[in-house]
Length: 538
Image (cartoon, rainbow, N blue to C red; front, side):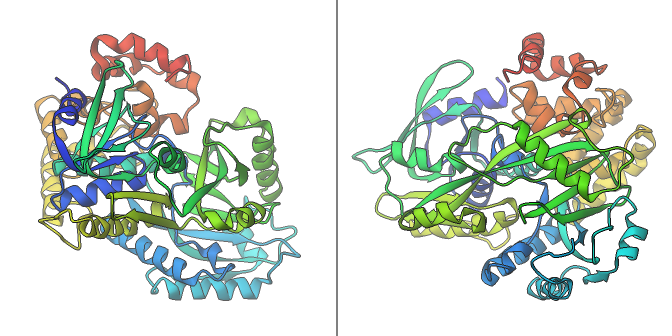
């Protein structure tokens, strides 16, 4: 019986302190925080882990410099502190990066004021990052020749952070961490409502999306972490709330790397919003749009592509303008923005001014919690607040601790690197790889990288790149099959890895080794999962 099937059996049989509906970043961090501190946690998602908003971000971990303009200093302070904690606690995964802001003449704020704002942002962030720099047009052209400075008075540079791997992979880190501390977790387990029984337990009907099997989960408390579907779940569960969501669609496009330098090129788009060119290994991620939508179900439109391409072509000096033919992949998702219901009409008029702050609403009488809004940068704050709220619900956390997150102890890392050196692991790194094998395996798997090292020791073929054109080696596929609940091919290509973010679908389909990867992941269902993905039905 595989991990997912075993967990589905446990979900049907056991009773839990808390059931978390939704395994995006809010649900994943809540599960990790609570299970680490001793709560008996269940976590389910109707799709794969991090398969909505949490897989469509810009991969930035930033303190919200743009919120200074709306004077939300308290929010910026909270976000900066959380950003600093993530950099310090996940040094292999979260890295400081410089943002080069190039201004256009006639912008609504003078360059001197924006530069002063960058220093204020640095101070609010406790001076944790490198200091800002003021740059002339000639200095920008010298350092980033690709930037068009023809209509620019110059700009400035400041620091935030970014994820070395993709956002969904970082979110899965917390899902896997929750599993390590006893949480019972399943993807493709759909719930549409919960009902509180006469005994005070919440009863949640669940359907296994793969087999159609139905069962119920019982829990003392319930956390609605459904992201953009929070409102719908609350309505179905007859749970009134003071807050609701306004939805904004964000679109990014992925193209071949536009700058050799590891910095984020930053502009203000034609609608006045921040606009980025973000390095992602061999590619660049460009965006984003900011369009009000009514439904979480969104697609990239021709207008979205035109907006992104037009804005970037105006701001860069390219040998030839980017066209839709240059797009390798696209990201499209909604940002759930939290608003008070009494202010919904106002929010609808000025929704672009809304921040990504999170709001947690509690019903102590029933033990029901709703998480509105939020962003990846804010995840540690969400975990802390959820822990405090569950304690207030009367659920005992026997191992309450202030630090339930972070990479494994440095001694474990040093032991892994020592064994990797003795094995000669880095000498097995494929020539096309962007970094040594030891560094990447530690970042992605933490202490589990020791077991991958043993796989390679027993069979050196395990260190070979399996899917040609990627960096993923054979033992990683076996590890994913056993430990990461890869249920569909998209789960691996899009979320456990970033293959689908940096290569066209037809390129992936023709990649040597892909069918072997499918056989490792899905056994006898390999062909069906392969066809499902490339038919666009996954």
